[in-house]
Image (cartoon, rainbow, N blue to C red; front, side, top):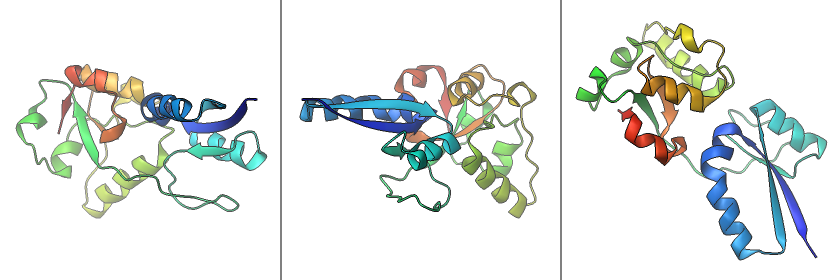
Length: 171
């Protein structure tokens, strides 16, 4: 008899972090089926609230009413650039130096964008969003844009797909 669990996950988590976890889980519990749904953050939460999914795996900016939250891990953010970017010569680049370049930031990743905006404001720095990315919500697209030299992307280090490493620079 097969049992299943439905997991909502934000797109980068579903793309980078979950596939190996789901495979290992399936090996350990062969009678279980994990069905992953990639969603935007609010949609992932709504799927849990409505019962469409059993759980969500995502970055949660703040605790939400009616949702039980358990921290699974923490991460550090890095600056993703193209391979020849001048920031690569400064392994300890300051936020001022990073934000002197156009920022590639997804519309859908509100928590990280808000944190960068708040820190920039505290330091009296201006955030300049790369015009090419103003309507991009897929972080994979933004990482590819960083690799192409269209700007810099601040991103959690564990959510950078390993296959991108040869094409990007990381500060």
